[in-house]
Amino acid sequence: MTSQGSGSTNVLINATADTSANNNDLNYHVTMNATARSDQFMTFDMAYYDSSDFATNPADFVYRLTFAHVLEFDDLNNNGLYDAQEPVLSITSLQNAPWQPLNLNNRTVPNNNTQTFLETITAANVTYNNTSPGLVNGTSFSISVTMRSSNLQLNGTAPITIQPNSLQYDVILQNFPAVAPPTAQNPRVALAQVVTSFLYSGISLDINSSTAPQDAQLIKSNLTYGLSVGNYSEGRLEYQSSVNITSLIGVGTNTWTGLLDPSQVNRLTDPNAWAWGAGVTPDQRNSSMILVTMNNANGGYQLSGLAFLDSDVINAAINAAPSLSKLSRTSMALFSSLALMYLVL
Image (cartoon, rainbow, N blue to C red; front, side, top):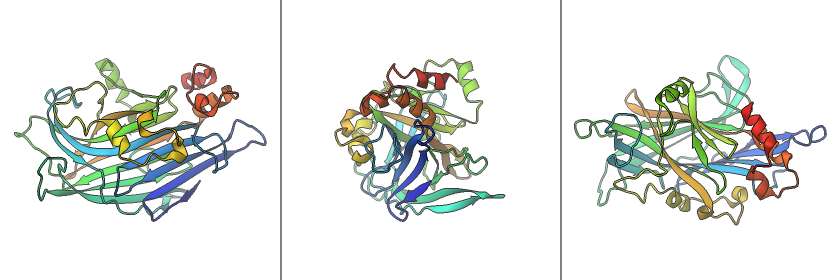
């Protein structure tokens, strides 16, 4: 695993597998691109390239996770989720947040000096409810994001187990002036994230509006749960089971609808043509906004997540159809029966 860009607003972490002399199916690299610029939203681009050559582009599979807003809503039915037309109490946009530079540090796992991981921490002060018209001299709060990555599976190092080909992250809010009862019945604080993928490759939540309560309870008995990206779960977003996740697809809101439009958020970030391809503009991508509730503890709000690429699934799908073009290979069409076998297993 290698890295570049430490000390800047954009760091790349690369993981490579090149055993082509023995097995041509294992010749690829993964690039995890974290960007925290003060002229856009913070983004993670998780990209898989079917070659160990770093000059290869665009990616065969890629998805983006954008940190868009901190949002408060009144959970009128107290189910932990945002439901259609529940009041939105505030939206603090993270666009143009003055993030600190991303300094990558090599850390040693406590009690095991043979295992290491990369870590960086960035933070910014932002004005609460900065999307409110006419806001003057608003209250500020701090937001920090800690990111970790390793080529090993590391348990107990972070709130969520670190996996190869993943970025594990923690988000913490301090001095957040949350709305409290009786102003709202059941106020919730959530992180609004945008999940972006190619047009043919959407997302699927582990728990959605059609999930039976007993099934949802069973799913949340695991340490983590979340959503899949791609037709065969080529990508995964995992969260602590203590949070609730709402997809805003088809969910109406009563205010600020433009700010909750994922396409609008996409247009306000660098398109990263290297990974996505020069012809794939933000409007030619599939995008969904999710709300992830934050845990309220120790006077602040916190959540932990993991952005993951399943190289086994992607490898299997690509190599099951070697004659397909790059774009159609990564669509993981019905020809990819081997990828489906991986998923079933």
